[in-house]
Amino acid sequence: MSSTAPRALRVGERALLVELAGGEETEAFHAELLRRRAAGALPGVREIVPAARTVLLDGVADPDRLAAELSGWEVGPIPARVGGAIEIPVRYDGPDLAEVAALWGVSVEAAVRIHAAAEFRVAFCGFAPGFGYLTGLDERYGVPRRATPRTAVPAGSVALAGPYTGVYPRSSPGGWQLIGTTDVVLWDTGREPAALLTPGTRVRFTAEGATTGGGR
Image 1 (cartoon, rainbow, N blue to C red):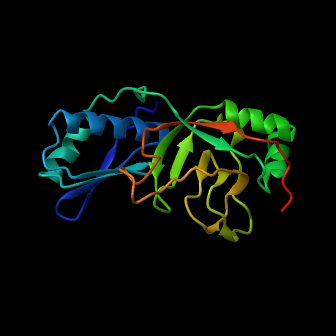
Image 2: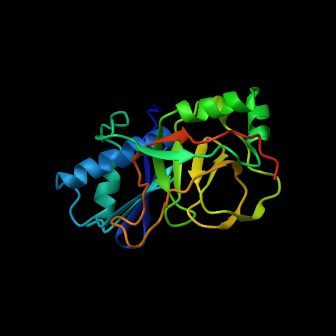
Image 3: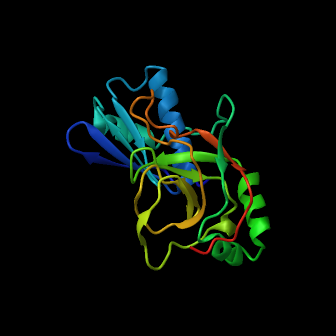
């Protein structure tokens, strides 16, 4: 990982926004914050919210002091998640699957195997309740967003954009490349926690049923 020191910015009276060099550094720093809070080293901190290259801490007792200390922290690699991965069965029938396969330079069947063989990790959540940004694919499999976003993407759509995989928890507009669908419920207010995917969760996608190249 990069050795670039984190940059902390004051946000109001009791919050800090910490900027990191990249996604891997952000995941590792988020894990370190959780470890320190569990050990009682971050008194008063109510929320720790990771994003692509930032982590927001709310409820910081002395923001200036913590900001000064951050540059001296030793942050190790992303720790292994305790417990097994959540399995999400997918019908690889998305309308953009053939286009994604072409971008990767492989057949549709090979694209499915590549995606289903990877183990993913939720880097952060956002966009909509229950939507996790999952990392795990090799960087060569990054794909661009669609030039023209769809006005409505069905709930359960498994999609790719940049280095991330995501699953739409509800119908919404979206510009990601759709490669499949799942019946798994990502957000359920009757469940505790409501979100199936939270930062740090390991995820595997399993191919279900016949694979098609899409075309809708």
